[in-house]
Image (cartoon, rainbow, N blue to C red):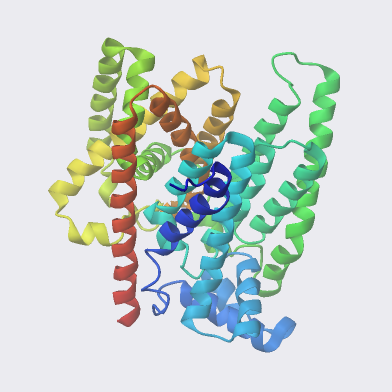
Length: 445
């Protein structure tokens, strides 16, 4: 009997499986009609394809309030292949395919086969990623560029070369979406860890940290500035005053915004919560786990009473866009409220798991992932946010969960772990498939 070599499996079969899983929810929907912001992005890209530097992008900037890298990318695609729904969606999907392969092979060299397969699998089966990986806009380009930038800092083996690429990727991401700025603190934290500023502080290390961040962010801004300055041609500022007022930083809405982020964190974790529950149980023991569960359940009840999460997205637009889309129109409100309670509780328990790892774990890789997960959530909770912005934590969350899954699998819980992972992928792909179908119906309306 012929046996497949490990090299053939790792080099061809596993990445092929990932690409098939990625494409499955999309193959029937590449011709979907445009919806929402897609219309403005497509119109702007058509202008760029026809008129180049003389394109009139007033309507785009008035409506979308983002720099134009994704528009230029789409305009270039139109110039080469012509303009159609399929070309538009394939442009974004091609980025997703490329990123999936990059993520697999990049992680394979640094983490081993199991994590390099499971982490991308968790990313591409996520319903939010499924929807936006063919949605014509800036969200997936922003997600990919930011993720590549931070991955290169996280796993850099030749610091200078990879840091330069990382800085350029972050600059292009900032030229795609202003929300890229929420990961700037993560770069500061990563650089302080790499330079070992703490706990052995010294003046030389501090100066090295300052020098690194000056050239790193200087290059980032140099790459992004030409794209951002184009906005000044069409607006009185980088963003219009009315939009700037919506995004004013403040603490008044921090608790409900942070709780809503926990809701999406819990949704991203999905059925894999059963695995990290087991991990938290192992770390804390039965009594402490039940005590944490009880305290967080009471806390969630209190927060749910004072801040009804299910209605936050309709508070005059000041809260943000954290709704669940078609789910809120299909699922009855009482069931939805109960589900919200459970999902927020999952998010809170996951944060408790992060706290334990941050305090007790000697795994530096895990600790770095925690900063990447937590810092953007905290930063975003001070201003108006949107559910799709949560994509910024999808890669570190998937890596963190993949690490736990790998650990649990090695501890002879193979059947249980495999069953949960298969359940996770099947449920999430089904939700993503239906979400694309829902968008198809809207595009036909």
